[in-house]
Image (tube, rainbow, N blue to C red; front, side):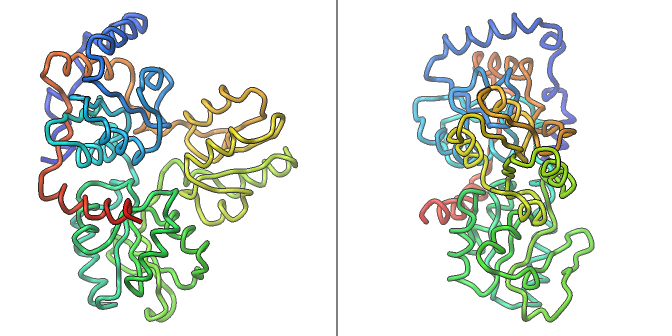
Length: 367
């Protein structure tokens, strides 16, 4: 059953009573449940989540980091993952079978992950194999579905994060002549460019038209980028950078590598969410920063570092719509369901997919 089919079922709709509760009552109930369940309950929260949810997180981090922390937590019977669907899938695959992973709101997905459909990917792989032969190793960003991770795993490839993409791409080129990078073309392009691969050696696979977008001879292609992107990070533009340079000449610009090549190239620094957070933490008091990443995190950094001048690179940016789905009512609903041993919105990845996807994850973690 697909996610869309599941969402049509009444059992996945937030009961009316939670929508009518006052915030103070919800917070009091959440605190009570956390106290009663103790170590049997673990709540990981992604950096991009709302502050109202993050306040109850037992650990805050990026997607893979939280899945790994969840896997090491053998005492928790229930893991209520405050993130998006692919993150909860990874947590389920890395935790033990007797642990239950719950996503408070099943609408919390990732537009980037959804841009790499497994059926389109299988068809693309057949076409690319006919064009290039057995010269391609697939890699996928961890921001992808369990099905895509499984595809990569059974075809000898690995997952990557924005923190270790350079290392994994270098490893991939020791295995094969070319790579297919899913599902974010920008992270793939920026990583390959930093490793000295020319833009003229990169092609783009368009899953909609089922065509390879490239001008030149196919034999010169080293990197095949899946035509996907993050809807948040693609909204940071060269115009935004030019505006900051004019308005705040001394301000440093730091962006996530999910931004376009042009934006990354014009920025002072780029790196993972963890890198951005650590850079701001270690920056001198009085320093000025424009940050190109999700607004919930930018706003939190502004609040946490009043001694620095921090702005969003794009002043009109909104929080990630799917990341922003989980709110206090949904969190309480999921917690009360696990408290009653009848969890709603459970995320369960089948055994075959878990086995194949784990191959891709382990190849990355073993590096």
